[in-house]
Length: 341
Image 1 (cartoon, rainbow, N blue to C red):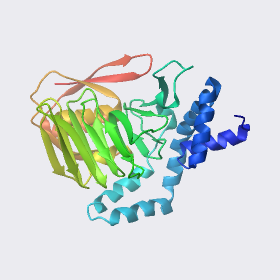
Image 2 (cartoon, rainbow, N blue to C red):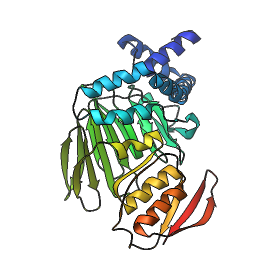
Image 3 (cartoon, helix red, strand yellow):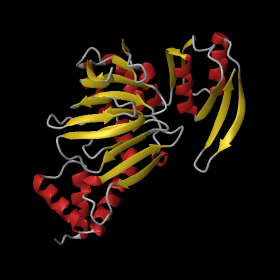
């Protein structure tokens, strides 16, 4: 099969953008399988699209016209209205393309690996946020210190990705192919087309799901058996993988979506959860050798404050004391350590 250079690039872009026809899909997949060189070119173009998509998405979402379309959709449901201000401000948040690391994982040797065996892994650096689109056009905002894995092509009846960290998904609607996000805690979120926030770090026992628009099923294990909850917009579900406990709350989404706008918002947030939020936002590690502060909760909104200012606010309400311990230097990052006592 022989194709001109410009033709194959155009087809690959349409293919990854989800705009290729059935004949074009068949043609491009056959071309990819012809040689390792073709496979590498397809991967290079997709990686380039992924790296530049952050800028393209930000530019498009900055426009008032695009934002008004989102606002219109949200006003159709009474649960959605309170979310609008946060979606609007999140659209103009600083999203840094260089905050991501892209890896391609091959399950088989390159000479024999089918195209569906290629897995992309996107990592955000501590203190950074990025956004990008999946092969099905689903928009993903990936929070600091998070990892998302997904195939270069969705095949079969489902679109499945795995998350270790926190992400906000605007899932492309496709009734024939369910979208599934798996977590380290062996729980899953299953949707067809919706907007939701999911937090599932592997070092945490809890998985936190907040639904903005549409419907999702939160699937989890309890007493060794599978269970699920059908969530509604404006609902927040917290699942504890350690004891199987699951809690449900109504929320306006302010604190859950604040990270997209580089903000820190606490709404009766427990002490440990508050430190976890600060860890992500400011790229710090906390050392806590006491449980005496676990009873405290915190409420407040912080936009551009230094972490020292936030900790001083904590000190007023809970009498915590803190001090800088050291700055750790790894090959990939610098992390500050703060002791709470």
